[in-house]
Length: 72
Image 1: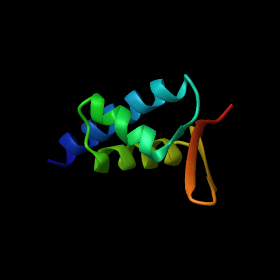
Image 2: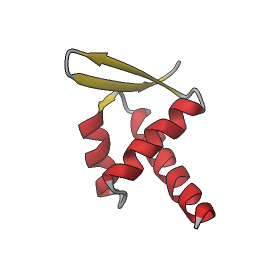
Image 3: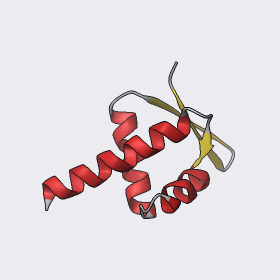
Image 4: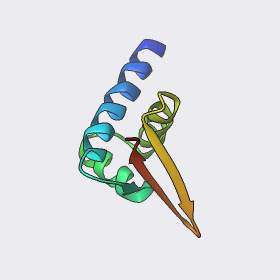
């Protein structure tokens, strides 16, 4: 089960990475995009964590909106 979840999180992270190549996203946009790709909102958040841990993204928060973008 652990290997399966790691695989699914990695797949979601890959789908998110390819979306972020097009530009920054809010968390809601990420959840919606990954939902269209077949991933639930929990996997979407895990994908954000995966990319953050890999130091691939930067995450900023203004008032009440999160913005996620690829690092340059």
